[in-house]
Picture 1: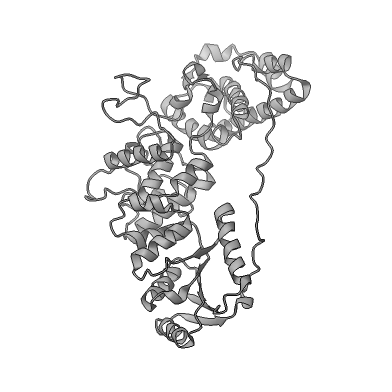
Picture 2: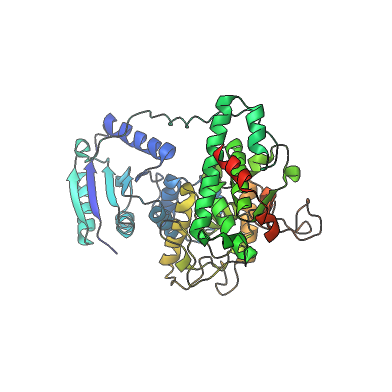
Length: 466
């Protein structure tokens, strides 16, 4: 247990300014996140499990979802994990006078564990009860400072703060459906000069980024155009496309332009990235974007179980069933939500490259890592555990939990199906190939040495300098 700095705020008059401050602070957290969290204990609750549910609700968990989850008396540890993963610096507890001393000590221990300050809003005029509460906290080794509402050390957030408008996205006209070999020429013919200039900037940037990535990975020697290990190259390339090049695109049109520029650059290095959009629906370019969107992440974080939330995040980001990453180790995950495989390890179908989930979802992985650390997991232990039998492979359990999560948030995962439709209706009874490239209709092929040699210098110069 770490000592916790505690601010005991005498709020027995319940001034309007304090009410507005707490309301605005909670609204700011709900709309924009932040490092200061307002916890409002349920009136009449005295046990620690109910207080933990109040903390989980303050962090953003849905109370109705909490009722249906099987937390198995792990509410307090889950609340601690989510606070650690979301990097809370200040914990404000409203109506703290209604809590018994045991719960106040629990809150102080919790704040100390996550290295956050604790602020107790004491709204009772009973000074004796307040003095006893302060004495109990001081006897446990915590430093308590008496304050008045006007002595809060930070400025109140702006009242009635509305969500910041999303950055304006360009309204793209209908882009040509030509393949990458003639895409720029078709765009020049069919788009207005202004639209073509905007599209061409994205195209050139994508091609330049691809050249830089290839040169950084394999050097600038022309021999890199003949690959010795296409499967290993495909794993590394898939991770780069997913995390940096195509997945983070702002919209479907930008993703399509990036894809065409990437295809052209890869072609010059002897690799054909073929896109087959026929089976991708009415808007195939929209399928190029990542499945783990901000709205999907927000829906996932309404659940309390960190293991199920982390499994859903990785499933939607990697487009793989949980069995592919059930062997993930705690040493592979960093405290800020990145995944770097240690000891030259790899995951089936994913490879050895690092995994960078979007920034808005990294706190989910960080929270589950904090939960595993509270379970005294070592760096060699699994990142995911079977709920009842820790020695058992958690893949099957995570699969069923992830299917339920995707159904609840209305984000169907075509690569996850129950029997008898194990492989998906679009595949019938044939095994479905999992992977980020497969879900986007992308396939990777190595070009013949003679074909690469016949790529004319004139075509390359016109393609990247015109």
